Length: 239
Image (tube, rainbow, N blue to C red; front, top):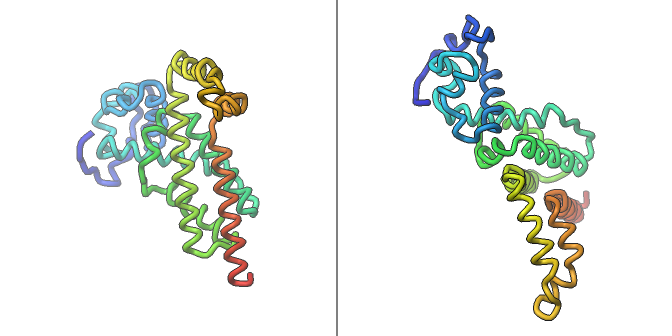
């Protein structure tokens, strides 16, 4: 896609496409997300999207001026899917843990899209809602504003980074994933204590741990640190 400005009142297609569907931003984003998971980044082309939608590729400019705008919309939709399924309880630590795990699971459900979008700032409705929501959880939990922002930043970056890392692993061909898992067993699991005493001593735990993502453990460590900081703040202020 290239730069092209279409007046807002001309963006919605009023006639069905060749396949009998009426175009909308939501339908284009959903189709783009599906194509990304099937074909990778190259799926974000006007020609491929138009073919999948049964529409003239030029009609997509009614909704997105360029490919990057569509990628931002896809990234924002991933955020929206997590938020729509998440229900806060009022317990800041439990709520952040549940939200983080939900974000991570959402990334793994769409690994190629998550890998492409984890580092993007969309400035769109769902991202704005997420920023407001997470800051609200922290401020309502008693964190001063500066601490709330610090923990928000760390929480989001940690979650997105693990989402991208683990998504990249999930997106590997099965044979490559199995080969990497085998390295832990056949290489690290057999290192002798005479040359690698620490690996040898911890090998059973290492082999078990490396089979899974470390995100839940990292998230718990972050939340424990945040809780300790909140206790310290309350101790200083007498709250």
